[in-house]
Amino acid sequence: MKQKKNYSLISFIVMMIIFSVSAVCSCSKKETASNPAEAVIHVVAWNDAADALTAIAKEYNESGKLGKVIVDYVDSNYTKLTPALVSGMNVPDIFQAQNRDFPAFMNKYGSVFADLSDLIAPEKTNFEKAALAQVIGKDGKYYAVPWDIGPCAWMYRKDIFDKAGIDVSKVETWDDFIQAGKILKEKTGTYIWGFCYNGSTSIDELMLLTYQQKVSYYDADGKVNFDTPEMLRGISVLKELQKNGSAFDIPDAWNDRIKAINEGKITSLPYAVWYTGTMKNSMKDLKGKWAIAPLPSFKGFGRTANIGGSILAVSVKTKHLELCKDFLRFALMSDRGNAINFDYGLFTSYMPSFKDPAYHIDDPYFGFSLGQAFIPEANAPVINFGPYYTALQAELQTAFGQIFTQSADPSSALQKAAERAQKEIDSLQ
Image 1: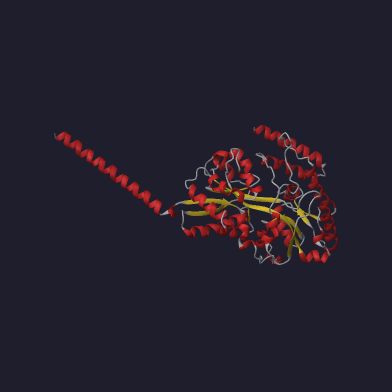
Image 2: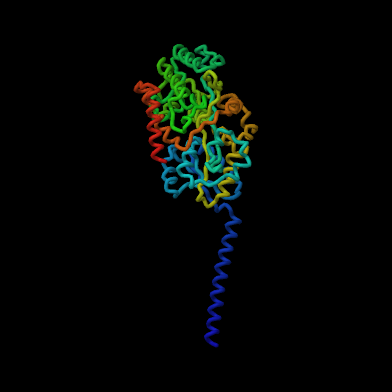
């Protein structure tokens, strides 16, 4: 009887311990649920985009909804993100990527991204179609939220163009633009456009010219093809500007462009709306001196183009998926979030926000409404970047440099670049 008694006592103690541990765990769970601020997610982004997210996160955090959002600044070359995607470890909860790069990311690191279809699918008709096309996986699911888009227009120094006697309303084609560049250089000594001649830091200007024509990087069989009429027409415009001395070389495209504009060397800029944020932050002395016109066009094509724009994706390993989705909904799919984005020069791909007052009031820097200037340019052609765009881009930049610094024949340089890109793609398949 004594032995049984001891077993009973031991059983009772064990049960009490289990009950106590369970109670502590239960209490801990209840505390976590009732105190959502304990959940923390990290969002990585760059430049003005990170600034916008920081401002958005500040408002979101003040609401104290599901947890706290911390924005971390990174470079736009994915130097920290790529190793994380490759290993699948230490991937940020939410991260930015350029929309043109994301199809390649899905192809290469597909298992890393969380499915966001429940967030996007019910609202898919509310997103600009060119942006939405870049976040759809092969299985038809959505693996990122389109963020901003880059509708393009022609920004120019009104005071300088008036001095040169150039009527911008009569500049309708790229041939007209080339002629205006000659006049501008002759009358004012300034340049109508700047681009990186060696192509190493950017070929955005060529992208703008070819996207406007709905360029394709692939032939009917799906093979890489750069030597196209669209590409050659784009190169011809830049080559003519270089030849007649009305283009300015900017080797370090981002920084040299800012420097040249501030120094009054480049006084015209066909570019994307997101660059207006950089102008406000980095060209403060030029406030009130700019005007905006539609892009010139090629015969038979429209005047719209989209350059850049980003997406925000979520790691499949995040411990706070609902918090990530809730923040993305506020940051990218609400009028308030998109009003803040617009304040930083980020033009939303979520079209219902075009009705927000932020898109209709005059901008203090420009003196007119940027929303009204760029909304008509937002319906740009959809470009098929394909799953290997990062490989294509590198070879295209090499060809660009050969054409503009070594006088290589454009057609030949583009053909050889396509062959190199296709060889690399074949090695990856």
